[in-house]
Image 1 (spheres, rainbow, N blue to C red):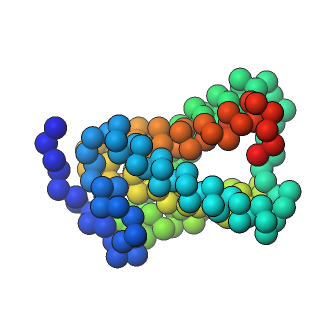
Image 2: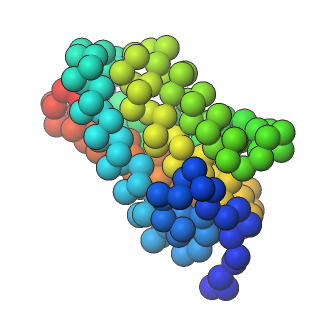
Image 3: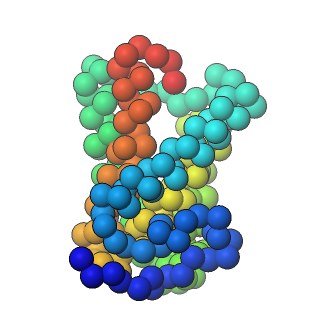
Length: 170
């Protein structure tokens, strides 16, 4: 596969993130990296949020475990990425790469806070990574732009979904 130059260089504000995140190359290793960058900090944020706002996590509908797993690992990533992508395309056009990513992640944090304040404190970080993935992979095409963050998001949700299937309260 040919190496594409990064259309969007790593912004100084996101200089702590690896350069690799800003290059749409090798989808499978990229997905693994993006997932690690999303999940590890969100676990730390989740621990902090649970200390600051105990018992403030999201409530899920009373559905069969398999249905809940599908909703969290497939349905939510697909629907939320479709919404996120449309918004990001507009934000990127109006404000540019970095502001689009920051506004998107902030918006998703606020949206998730409406259901549970602690959730919004945690969720903005993974959406910062998902938003970055979308705009980085957009240079390879819209299909890639939607697919990569959908897969990373699905992996992000798989851990909590599996814990809930096993009866662990998340």
